Structures are given as structure tokens and as C-alpha cells.
Length: 313
Image (cartoon, rainbow, N blue to C red; front, side):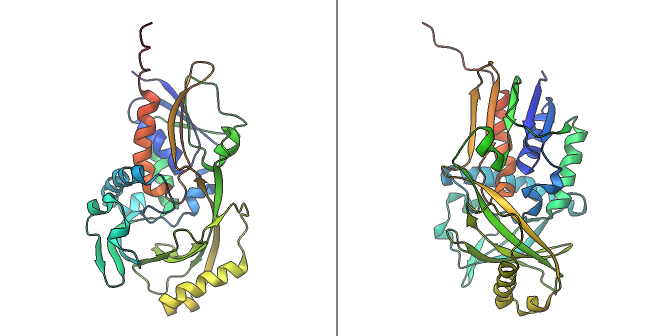
């Protein structure tokens, strides 16, 4: 039996959650403050890999569920923007990862680190495809600034960084990421050398429109403007790995604020003062793309579950 659901938030978390609900027969409206192409999700590099996200005990299952979806979508790359691409996680070791790593096809060690053929997602194309998929399932969009979460029978809160004020949840904070997009000088594989707890990393991702270079992870930095000096350092670090990057023409600069949360992702159901159902699905840090589908399934199940029976008096 269908019911009305409002999903607040138009990034990848909101769209995937709305799709799961709509394709299960629910009437879904997505409230979004901005067009999806203008969200933090659109600025993401797009590599599937758990990065700067907690809690570790739950991330593996969400990530693997999402991996299976992306592997299927990679069969239609021109339509979905999802490709399977070979690459290297420099310095990474299987012993440092959770049990989920054993279930990633082809993930293997060599002297330099971990190699794998992983989903690499062209985010503008993918987000457009998600919008069309939701519309085909009967979902609708409303562009509106939510000053508070709506009083409706069923609401799913996928507002990312906006949850800091809307919930409010002061555990939510930004982790600033800056990227540089250059003309690809012939790089076909992705590469990462990541400081999990540091402000800098080195990585590059070949996309159809250019090579994405990164990056930064600056906690509690709300600045959305690209910094020229930071961009120069990003290019220089990437050029140490692939020297041909040094002379590549710069096409664009990107800045995104990752929605981190001190105690990790929040997927939780509560009953509102008006008797409605409110499900939270936010705080995905630097891995929203990686866990989106697994988190969407869990949040949708909470949103549509029957209330637990009251114990007898």
C-alpha cells in the first residue's frame, strides 16, 4: 500500500533514498534547496572507496551493498556515468581494512599498495540519471528552502551539512575538499595516496571530461571559494606521481564541504510530536557515494516499517 513520503535533500543520499522508496510503490516528493548539479555530491571525485566515514562496524555492509549496484550500472556507462577502472591505493594494506575488503572482487596487494578495479563515477552524469530514474518511478521535486523539517506523516532527513541547523545536530561539521580539473594528458588509471587523518592527500581520477586532481580534508572550514595556492600544491603533488600532469591545462576548480559527523553516520527513526515518522540519514563524511545505496535501503526500511506494538500494561 503506497503512502506519501517527503525526502528532504537533493544530493546523492536524498536521491537514492527517494528512488528506493518510489520504486517500492510510495509517493515521494524531494525537497531540495538547490539543483542537484549544485550540491556537494556534484563536486565529488566519484571513486567508490570508504573514506573518512564512521562507524566502521556498519560502513562495510553499506559500502558492499552500494558496490553491487555500481557494478551493475557500469554495464551502461554512457547512460549512468559509472565505469569500472583499474587503480592503485598507494601504501594501503589489506591488514588495515575491515572484513568488507575480502568481499571486494580483485582487490589485491602488491609492493606499492592495493590494486583494484573499482567503480569510478562521473557525478554530473550520474546525478542526472538518478533524477530521471526517480521521475520515471513517479517521484517529484520541489525547490524550497526548508527552515525546519516538515510536519508530515513520513519524512526522511537527508540534508547532509544542513542537518546541523535543521535537526539541530551540532555533531555535524564540514570537512572542506578542494579539487582541480585538468585536461587529461593520458592518464587512464586512478591513484590515491591518502592521509586518513591529515589535511592533505594526493589522488587523481580520470573522468570523460578531464582528470580530477586532489585534494584536501580541512575540518571545520566553511570556505567554498577555491584557494589558488592550494590548487598549485595539489597539482604539484599529483605531478610527483605522474610528471605529465605538471603541464596539463587547468579546466576548473571545485570545492565541496563533506558532511562529517563526530559519532558517524546517523540512520535512525523517531516519532515526532505530531505522531509522524522522521528518519534521519546524514553524516556520511567523505563516502556518500560509496555507501549511498546501502544507507538508502536501510533508511527506506525504517521509514516504511510498521510501528512496534506497545507492551501490555
